[in-house]
Image 1: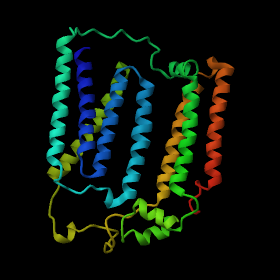
Image 2 (image 1 turned 90 degrees about the horizontal axis):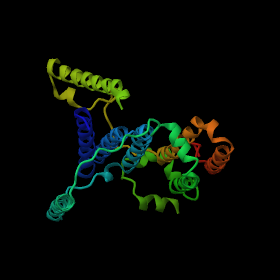
Image 3 (image 1 turned 180 degrees about the horizontal axis):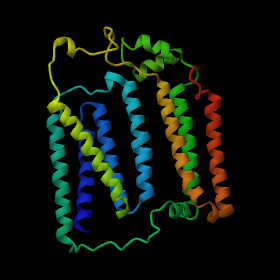
Image 4 (image 1 turned 120 degrees about the vertical axis):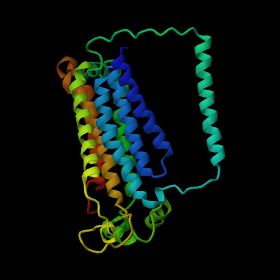
Length: 199
Length: 118
């Protein structure tokens, strides 16, 4: 790993880790989603470094482009109720837990480094075709045939689940845009309310 | 990896340009705030209602259907690139995959989830 690669790795890791901290720490859920976006972009950079070019592009297109937007839709759908209230209860427990996790993680790392004689070895160079769309296509239709077909079934189930969750048994008049505009000022929608209106 | 250097240069130039434009306009721009200027602007008329307007749940449904069909398009892409080498087995595999996709599409269509007004 030369200096440029090291700097690139550090930058990508920093983006990913800072985004992760924002994701779990932000009070405002929109900021949390933006932190998630940053994490995804950082991980896409790391994929690129591992010569997984197709995966990096898909990471940006599907995760950064579509999944984060989906999260934003859900946050907007929840409205003000998505924002968690500021409460001091359990703050000590939270910080103690975070500190314990940090200490145990660092301790485990130190232990591993002490017991095993770790000598940094360079990874073997990847073949030139590694990570390209051609090689992924070849792999997908030879050794990963069954998971590929199962993923098709999974997507089918996801579609049915999405329709069932969002539409319910019959068309709900309260979900129409006209009704939305009226009820938007009174209260935030909750799962209980929509269930009530549906039955 | 080194083939992506121009791309990263493009990213850096874009970030520097965006940051510079914001900084320059903040530093050089005249600032003369009055209470009238600081109120929210909404097409020149008085703002009414709350800050949050609840969007329809249909946006969510449309978004999640988009994600699902997006992933399916992504999985079709490697097959098209390797189409000649994969041959009939690839065609049969992709055929059954697309069959499931069509079932999902028919279900969504039949349920009326593609229509906005229903």
